[in-house]
Length: 191
Image (cartoon, rainbow, N blue to C red; front, side, top):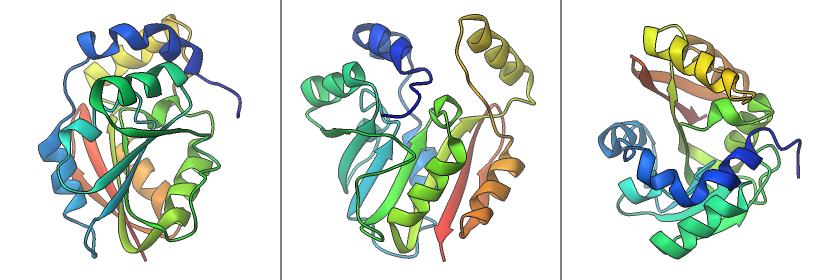
């Protein structure tokens, strides 16, 4: 696999993760997925960890894709989800084979965010949507989060909503900033 980034940390905290993290915002994810220009039958949750975001979604066939074996074990054992150990920069899915990709509270942990966005774009079918929920490092809470993650040794790198939209455009996705704030959503629709 790739340079592991924050994977060791998530392997260590996997048994406690769901106890300390709030549920994913299912309404925000659904609002993002509504931008898809095709029916969503197959979804890949990249950096999906314990399946927290997948559990907030209803309908499509979901595969959790993560580099942390501890977190994937929880997704399988606790939530009954399909999971695959992956490098987000080299997804093991065919070109145009999925209708949607989500990355929830995880993009900032990926060692090569640009490669992960390019891979998400590659596996999306035309009209499919990449929905990213992230934290804005320019908000007060965002600055606190950045400082906290760096203090515990994480290599986190955060996009602002506008910078993420630009990064999506660079990989041939039509970007849309759906909502703003500490937690924000940006969607990229495959052209």
